[in-house]
Length: 286
Image 1 (cartoon, rainbow, N blue to C red):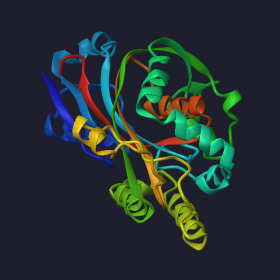
Image 2 (cartoon, rainbow, N blue to C red):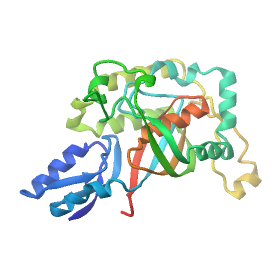
Image 3 (tube, one colour):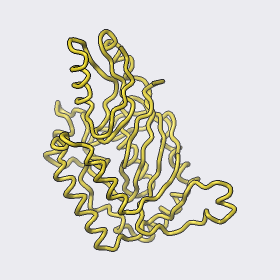
Image 4 (tube, helix red, strand yellow):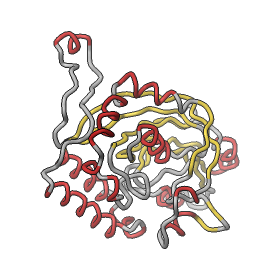
């Protein structure tokens, strides 16, 4: 049997398979494509004789919609990581902020996304199940920091990529979003440094509040309707105490990490970035 299952936010792929094994006792159970705990969406479950098709189905392209927040990064590339203090928004130089405002115009941003089409060498995340010398990277990374240059790279293919929208999120809402998502882990949190992660995020927001929630370094460029443009609503304006976020859709090959793609997009902009949310919308045609 082939089951198109929607993995909820906060669950691990392993826990999903465990549930299906309990539901189908005595049956072989497998799946196509691991989803991170902080990701949700389509997960193809295989049971019985269809488990033999795993190798065939795992090669299918996958479609994602993901939100990238700019000006902040973590060691995992998503909210389930330790915030890197060096990349707080307030630390960006004014000149750098000006260049970024220009790059975050809708037209310019779309041009940057186009540069990812086709094959490129992607650095795998430090917190991933990729093995190096027989050990999974996430096991090594919990004990010591691994420099990005020391992480393995591998070819991936971006078949399609498009900007769906820009939006801003007040820091107060960003804070609620972060802790709301972390709270979805429940009993699984203990496997992902949850206490340390929550503590670091609290420190991050405490510093932002003490600084009066400084201006984000990007103008608020929204995708505007024709009516908005005629009314002058498209004039860039400072976004006071707001995060700048892009919602992106991508169709990618097997082995592509969306967390790494988000960081690479930020790198081309000259700013740190991380995934606020990841939703897999399709596996192949499912």
